[in-house]
Length: 207
Image 1: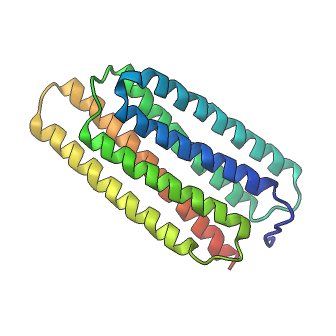
Image 2: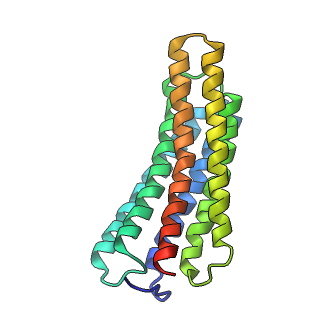
């Protein structure tokens, strides 16, 4: 196991750029629910952000292959990159289905989910940024706890939304479409907690 080496900033630069992309994607997803008439433009922007995130992930993996001494375990670097990519994939999938399924308008529950998602991604980005000064861990634990709390809130919103879909009945196909969209949005929020858990594991290994 290697200790953190602040002089090598490349990994941290890549982590933070990837985190910024996640935050922006969550914001655009929320903007989609607020400006639904322009949903195709928002979906296209999220698609581009997903490509940008893939590029950052590939660059991180390539740098990892060329680097002998890493700031923390190689497995954890790979896992952190994968967790960030997962969040982007879920946001991209949820947003695309809004147009693919010809959803006429966002539901109140989806708007709530995107609000929680923006907060969770913002906190995850802050936590990722703290890896650069990892030995100064003050406040990092609080960020991880807040992400966990938001994940619980996201679960509650999702469960309520799904229960409402089945209670109200209606067209079974519409119910299936909305259930998938809500589940994808929830998985994006879950992904933020996965990022937090990865960071927590890094903390424990480097304590």
